[in-house]
Length: 173
Image 1 (tube, rainbow, N blue to C red):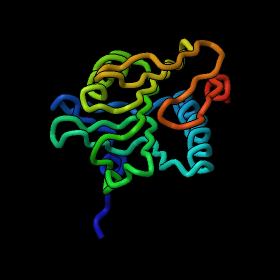
Image 2 (tube, rainbow, N blue to C red; image 1 turned 45 degrees about the vertical axis):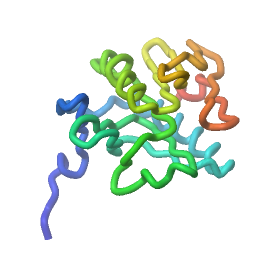
Image 3 (cartoon, rainbow, N blue to C red; image 1 turned 90 degrees about the vertical axis):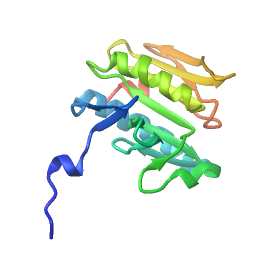
Image 4 (cartoon, helix red, strand yellow; image 1 turned 180 degrees about the vertical axis):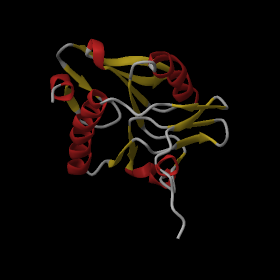
């Protein structure tokens, strides 16, 4: 039996516009936010029978060899589940990036442009240090701000029907 190294088991390498990018593992604050949000979305999606929710690391292959990303959380509608294979091969219905130290430019600009290019219907950006939560939706091929909260408040999803997230529930814990 072959033994796998930790790097082989947990590969945090993304391919962004053809370039391999290796990210460090996230800090605990990032993981708390990710798990709080995942539980909230997953519970809602399961109760309503809307599809599947996944969390990182899981490769989303938008274009083989050119763009293979690992969003922190992603949602796939029931009618889009054929993209769920060994990895996700195609366009998810929602992706969420939680900005870590050093990833601001990647998450808020570069990855946003990539998700927009491939037509990901909804893109969430969470900036923990500023307690900002933004939800963008595709309109005429471009992302437009759909919902926003800073410090406190509720954001909504256009793609995940009926989902409302009180951001205090995400940032506390």
